[in-house]
Length: 210
Image (cartoon, rainbow, N blue to C red):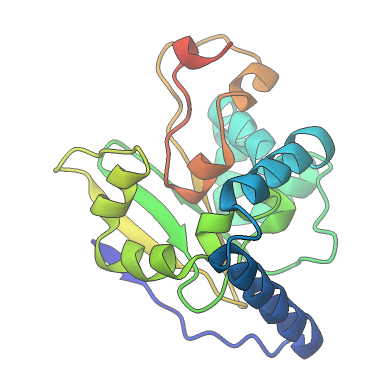
């Protein structure tokens, strides 16, 4: 495993940082005392992303799969590439590094000290991404964590763990599934999930889609 561990400096917006910590603490307390089920929170998040806030990252991936020149521009400057598709940063302008998966290397993203996350591209973060077990374990034993989440990687695939911060965030560019030659970008985008963009899953195989 290789890892990129930045020292975090979340004081660029103290008010937002304080509010985020309070929200996370309240969520953790409610879950711990049984008032809220994590699955319910994830379901609300999924509905928001599907019906209200589509995952812009899936559009970037689909275009990168069909356009090698765009793929190069995406890796070089993610926000500039996003602007080409009419995707704006909104309040978020933190640099984004796009990590290309291959047959030999698989990338996975975490934020060990908080929950830094490129929400402008990936939508709302899942509950497990903010949980202490994921944040601590995926750095120490990434293969075990990925396996528990349903992704078993071959032993000869290198797993690289990247630690997000207030200065830089990450998005995984997964490999294009086999059997998708000639597919439209919309159809390709339907194969990409938020979890694949974080690196804890791979795009759905064509036969797994409705």
